[in-house]
Length: 182
Figure 1 (cartoon, one colour):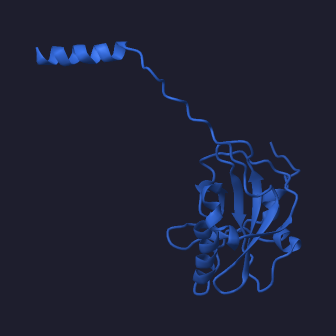
Figure 2 (tube, rainbow, N blue to C red):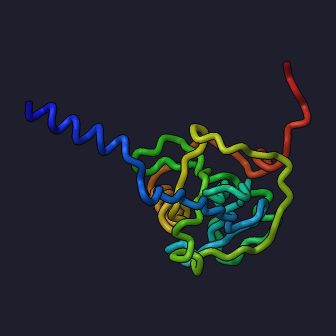
C-alpha cells in the first residue's frame, strides 16, 4: 500500500507540465590560439631555446584545437624558420614513454596561464591536412607541462643515456609524399 502511494505520487508528478522548461546551454565556439604553420619558441631550464610547430588549427568548434609537434631544437639563440624546417620531432623515452613522438592536440582552455612562456617566431607552409583523430594523437590543455617540461626532461635524460633510435623530421609532417605505392 505504501509503495502504491509513492508510485501514484511519482506518476502524478510526471504527468504535470513544468512551469518553466530548462534552458538549453548555448554552445561556446572557440578559435584556436595559433595559426597552422606557426613556429613557437620557449625557454628551456638550461637557458637554451626550444621549439614546436603547429601542424593544424581546427576552427569554429567547441574546442578550437591546435596540433602541436615539439621539436628537438635546443640551442642558445632563438631558432629561425630554417631551423624549424630542418628540425626533428622530439621522441620521448623518459619515464613510461616508449619512443613516442611528442605530437598532441592542444586545447586553449588554460592558455592564459602559459601565454607568457610561448612566442610565435615565424610561419611555415604545411601541405598536409590533419583530421582530429582521437586515437592517433593525445589531447593536452597544458603547454607548460606537456610541451616545455617534456622537452626539459627528455634533454636531461639524454645527458646520461643515448638518444632514441627512432627519428621523425618536421619535413615528413609538413610535406605530402609525392610517391604513392599501391
